Structure formats: structure tokens, C-alpha cells
Image 1 (cartoon, helix red, strand yellow):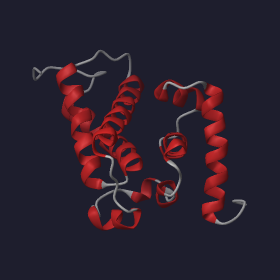
Image 2 (cartoon, rainbow, N blue to C red):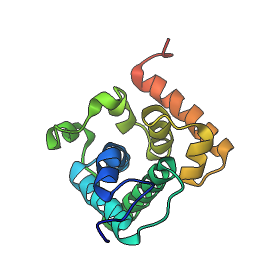
Image 3 (cartoon, one colour):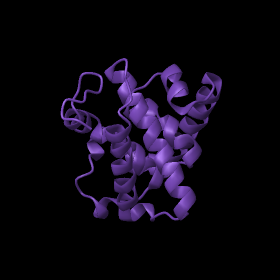
Image 4 (tube, rainbow, N blue to C red):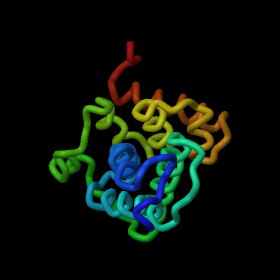
Length: 162
């Protein structure tokens, strides 16, 4: 990568700074282990650096990083088949920004098939149509996962959420 490389108008360093929390959040939600999430975080940004794809906008860049992070985590899980207990996560990396969403602890308790949709919707504030594109799923599938995921969150929070 040359020093003048641009990613939707951002330098590599600017892209890392701007989207580090997003990629970290995706990796932690998927892997539930900070050490493993760090590996996938690094792999995600390495792919950005070495593949140097073209982006139409910063939103395109962000969506690409999320998709690559999800794929990196899936590959990591296929290769390693292990996870840390959820209750050990805060001690492993106290610098993780839980303030981004006070629901992080609840997301850790949801089944993984709902976690990505819930995280992207509530924490990253994507619309259903955008989540469908990022996750490469049908919009109705995303809506169903979101609905079922909300029901699970309600049971985790202990009530109907009102």
C-alpha cells in the first residue's frame, strides 16, 4: 500500500480510527472473546490495507468492513471452535466501550443467529434494508431475526420492555 492510498477519501489510519469501534463491536459480539476478536480485527484491517478495494462512499467502506469482520469471525470459529465464558469478557479488555450500547451484556446472551442483526440495528443503527445487504440476507429474513431477537432480549431484560 502506498502512503497516498485512499479509502472513500480517508487514509488507512483515518479509516482505522473511524471504524475501529464498529469492527471491534462486530468481532466481540460474534466471538465473545477479546483476544480472538483482536485477531479478527487485525485481519479485517489487513484486508483493507492489502486488497485496497474501491469504495463509493464512507457508508460503503463501513459496510464492507462489517462484512469482512463477520467473515473473518466465521472463519476463525470454523478453525478454532472455542469461546470464552461471557462473564470473563469485561476483565479481559476494560477499554472496550460498553457505553456505545448499554445492551451489550444482553447481546452476549442472545443466540449468535440473532446477535449480528440486533447489534447492527441497535448499536450501529442500520436500517433493515442495509442490514440485509451487509449480511447478504433477504430483508424479510432480517425482519424475522430482528423480531425473534427482540423477544429474546425482552426475556433477558425480564419483561415486555415498557
